[in-house]
Image (tube, rainbow, N blue to C red; front, side, top):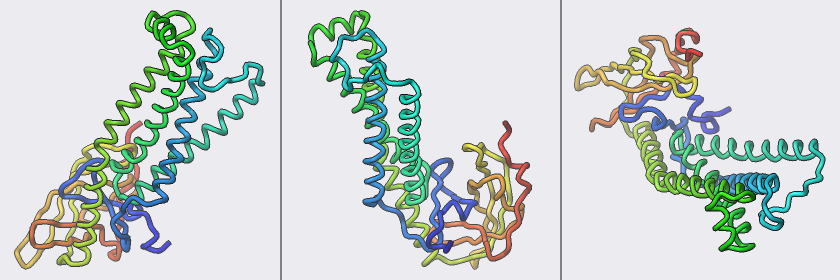
Length: 292
């Protein structure tokens, strides 16, 4: 795999002097700053459709399991289907929806170089699909006799459980989706600006040799540790010791004192990356693995 085709996470550890946690941004060598593409939009549409179908079918099955009147379900689910067939169809459908969702998340993470932006980009179509699917069930149920259905649902009468649950799912996922949607533009802009800065510093910045001094583990994000580190390097302006965050995996924690490359624009903005040409060595994996 060439550098231009690699994922930014393949170049871990990832350093930042400004960001932390899911905001840490990477850019693979040879890659351009990521943007929203047609492929990402198609994957997002598939994710929306998949979770919409899951929500719609789920609430319809729930409706069929209650004593709701006939015709109140968005999808008429036959009650005489073999149990094995229903389970097999649910497993296959669930696998396909999860595959599309994971693929969208990985595409976005690769493209934007940031887990926060990727997570928001995945969450919006997922939640929107669930909201639309559940809302469709509610609209279909209420359409039979709006006034009576609403009255029975508000009074918690038997046969309206599915309607009440579907409405709650639609409202909760709708509010959550709007919250994610409001945060998404700023997250995409931040990721793009950080990647553009990395690209600019690699191209135009002054390059200095430095070394990393490991500090404490701040926390684990999943199984990946994030550490406080100090980057020491010399430039014509003197010696520097820059505080930074380092995100990596337990098997890719560089040994204390490992060589790094510091790109400096002489205006206080720096980018740091491990000097792979120096043949870095790594700390024992068990030392930085998250405790169970």
